Image (spheres, one colour):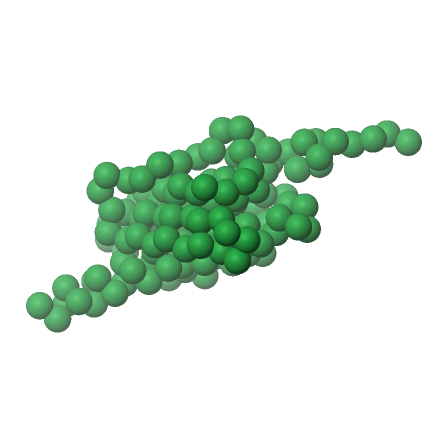
Length: 133
């Protein structure tokens, strides 16, 4: 029986841990959110929206490898999507894009999806407030 390591089983997630995409705050953004999950990990997202689409998305986290992988892949999923489309990215979408995470780490995908949604809501709230002016 061949033994498969966790690194091989979760290859896509490990790629995003080793080389996270879009990590670090954006200098110019118009949507932002910071959420601390029940496990204590905090994730922060920034989005730059132009003409209704997310042109740039970035994140930081103080969490573990699965949190880094989840934040990284979520920024990739959000890029070039309309804000409402990006808002609907779910935990399931993040897990599918990562090709899975260990069961005990799947909450990291939910934290990433929720933080992106909150950043989109922040952008939409700011847009609504600007329309009133």
